[in-house]
Length: 581
Image: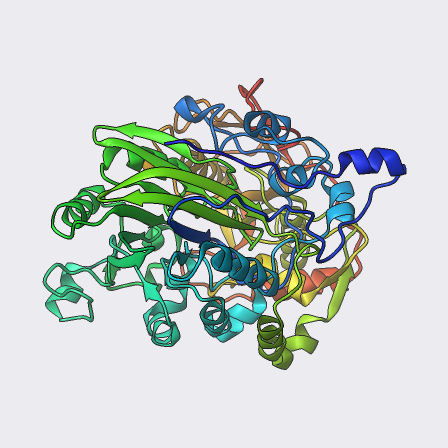
C-alpha cells in the first residue's frame, strides 16, 4: 500500500518577511484542507474528544517515553524528533498542532483547535468532496466525558451533538463510567451504532439472564456492522477499552467483563472475510496505540485499525506485517483537534490502495456550522453562568498531558495538600484535560475540564512509605511494561509533597527510588503518612475534587512554583523526551 502525506499550512516565511507572527484568518484556509481526490470510499475518524464542544488549547506532551521495542518508534516521539520523523516544518501550524514546541508563542499565532461547530464544517466538506454514498463517520470513544456539562448531563449533550455531526458508529471507554442505565438510555437516543466485540456478560449475569445483544455468546453489545460505501462492503468492528473494570470502579459495570480478546476478534474477522465476503475490514479501537500495534501483529485480515485512547496524534499509519499480510495502525489525537481522513481504493474482496491524512481542525480557518453552534449554545445555556464563574487566574501555562507531570496536575496536588491538610497528594495521570494560557482567567469550566468524573470524591488516608512506593511501582509498570498488553494507557500518577527518581527501563519493582518528602527527609518504609487523593476505584465520601480545587483558587494563596519532583534516569537519548518530566 502506498501512503502519502500532504504538507499542511506553513507561515514561517510570512513571519520572517513581516517581522511579526501573523494570525490565521478565519475562513481563508489557503488550501490546507484541499485534498487530492483518491479512491472510491472515504472513512472519517475522530476519537477522544472528551466532550469538548468548543475550540480548545491542548498542549501535546514533551515526555512520551517508549521502552524496549517501542523506544524511538511512533507514538513515542516528541518535539524535534517527531517533526523529523514525519517531515513537518518547524515553526509551522502543523508543528503547533502535533508537538509542544514553543507552544505559548504558537498558540497566540494559530489559535484554538477543534470545536464541534468547526468540526462539522470540515466533516461536511470532506463528505461533499467524496461524493454521495462514499463516506462513513466513526468515533473511537471517550466522546461523552470530560467536561462539567457532560458530567452533569451524563453524556446526553454529546449524544445530541454526535447525532447532528452524523456519527454512524462508535465504541466506548469513559462512556461506561456513567453506569449501565445511563449508558443504555443514551444509546437509545444515539442514531448510530455502538460496537464492542470484547464486552461479555459475567457468568452470574448470564445465569440471571442479564440483557445482552447475543445471549448465546454473552456478548453485551453488537460486535460489528457491515456498511456499503461506494458500492463496496466494509466491515467495522468495535473494540472497547479492554480494562474498564480495572481502571475504573467495578460498581459501574458489575455484570460485564472486558478484555482484548484477540482470539474472538480473529474469529469475527474470519467470519466477515469468509462468510460475509466483505471487501474491507476496519477495527474501530480504543485499545491505545501500543496495544493496537501488538494486536495487528497477531490478528490477520484487518486492513486498518482506527485507534484511540492514548491521545497520540500520529500523522502517518504504521504498517504492521503479520502472517496474513499488512495492517495499518493509526491514532487520531484527542479533544477534537484532529479529523482523520482515510481514503480507500477498494476492489473485490480487498483494499488495493490507501491515502491517510490527519487534519488539524484549526478553528480560525473554519467557519462554524450554524446549526451545531446553535445546538451548543442551547445545551450550555442552563449551566452557562455556573461554568463561567471565574475562580482564579492562570499564573503560568497550565497543561496536563505528559508521562510524569503537568502544571495543571501540580495545581490540583497543591489544592489537595493545602485544603485537606495532607503531607502527600496523589492525583491520577489522566490524559484528558485542556490547556490554559498564562494570564488567562480560570473558570469553573476549566476546573471541571480536569476533574469531571463520576467518582470525584476526595479522600485522606494513612499510608506507609512502603505502600506509597508500591503504588508508584504498580502504576509505573502499567506505563512502561515492555508487553503492551499489560499497559492501560494512562500517565504516571501525579505527586505532591514528594520527590522521587524513576528509571523506566528497569524491571517491575525496581523503577522507583530515592523517595523524599518536600522537607528533604527520606520516605521511610514503615512510617505512616497522611495522603490525600481523588478518583479512587474504592467508594469514597469526601468533597468532590472540583470543589476542593475551586476553593483553593478562590483563597488567593500564593501558587506553588516548585518544579515537579521527578528525576528520570536511563532515558538519555530517548526521542520520547524533549524537556522536563
